Image (cartoon, rainbow, N blue to C red; front, side, top):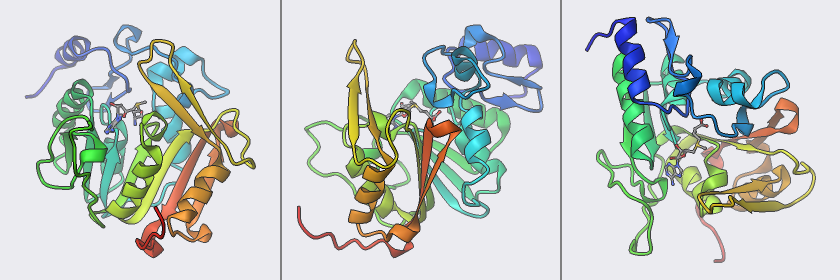
Length: 269
Ligand SMILES: C[S@@+](CC[C@H](N)C(=O)[O-])C[C@H]1O[C@@H](n2cnc3c(N)ncnc32)[C@H](O)[C@@H]1O
């Protein structure tokens, strides 16, 4: 369907709230131009010295992209997997940068429906979205939806299916974050990129912190860079293949892991 600007604005409002600011360059508007359409929670992962916490939520994740976009590996011609793709922001940016294909996964149907709608409006034929828990993701063309539960007897561990696997502000909210890193290292052929908050955790100390929301709706792990790089190294990836990019005054960190020398022969349990 072709939209006029007024029709697009009406559809954006109907689909609110928007967790991400998705731009429609041909129409000259974005999903969160009107603050009433934005999810105005504490967007600390997009807070910088130059914005307020409300601006961070309205622009999310543009402030982060402006920083990490300068040091991410090239995605030109690559098959990319984004885990926790939400409304599609990073998936669309990877497509703009010349990715051969982008697969976005998200466990929340509402975000995925908005992502799929925006994808169709933007005309990205090489981007596809699946409603799926990453832990259950098997890389098949039609992965099974649903949350990981104790009724699952097998957790798929596909090998080497994408060139670059990307995850932004998701690892910290998972129940099994270390296992997710292992799965990412297996499912990638070349790069794993993990971006997480790092505020108030000393880079040179080996530690992890777990905080739980008062209403129990979610939790956040904060790992020190030393902890995570030691863990990734323990999986069998040489330290020289793990880049740690601390940015935004120490509030955020990206781990860029070259998994080509990843050894799958783990010892021990
Ligand atoms: C804090 S948001 C971050 C969204 C986006 N990556 C960004 O940085 O703007 C976390 C996202 O991950 C999704 N998510 C959480 N657990 C997931 C899982 N196990 N598998 C797939 N998606 C998940 C959530 O639904 C949500 O869209």
